[in-house]
Length: 397
Image (cartoon, rainbow, N blue to C red; front, side, top):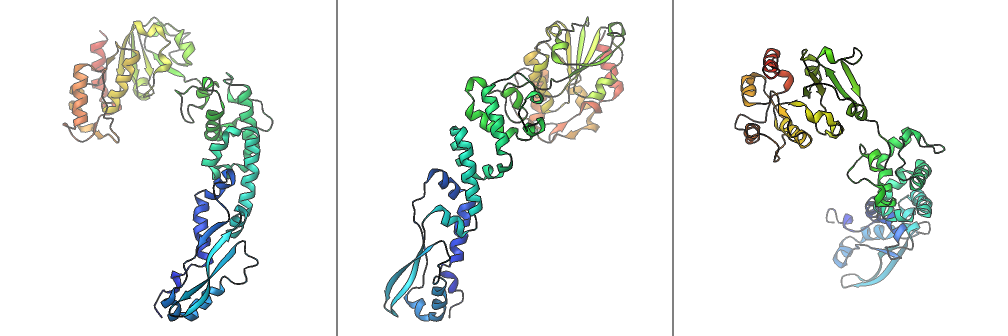
């Protein structure tokens, strides 16, 4: 007998494994929705041929018995009389036939999942027929949502009745639904809202979970603008270190001459008293929250960030809003003097920057081309304090 001969003949377990692979790809659940598979579904069996049948007749008999007495199986065996030159006519199983999606699911012990999917599908499509494509593309996601589906439907019905509601998620009043539930399911809700809401009710400039509130017209927690007043004569009721929402900051109109932007909080706290000056605590990319503070446009603005590719990219973006802003301690001389403090930038940003000065662009090119070293980065907090104070004295005269 040739080793491994029996494994070449298809067994019911082989068909089960094949169907399971298809199930895991969502094929049979998708068919339950769209009826794309023609039934009866036929799986052809690889059976012994003439010489193999002759050489392994005993094994072939055992293999054939796997397909006999299948009354309790959800499939039908198709038999065929085959005439072989070596052994004559023999009746062999040549295919398994499944008459429905239910028989397939029963065979692989997935009948419960199939029934649940069909139930959930009816619940969703009864209310939101436009979600059929979503269900087709994500059948297993729908199964995972079974315990919370009714709540998701309730929230979606609510947003369709109250598009762009202009309230906080905390204020949404739906029986059995709390803020935490909505927060936890933003991804799914966002996918549904995108399909079901009119495009005029979606802010497509906002994306992902972080942009959920703005995308669908909810109020979001405003970013707080923290700043220190460096001139004691400008203190507000004796207060020098404050944090305000953007709308209040926009109406502030401090009688300051200079505004420093520091990306490092500790550096912001270390600024000494400076006549007619304040320091804002930066937050990296994104300065939209400062746009409405029109009084800032009349000030001398100094931006201080890290000397690396991202630092210049942030400076470049800042100048899109405040084109007259100058950089502070982001020059080549500062970088070279502090060479002992260089570190490697983890993921440099190699993009074209159009809002830099000639000197800044030159240094940025050196960083991008790595002419000074691999991914050179000088973090602003590593600049010596004495050097920082000396630079302040020069520009504050």
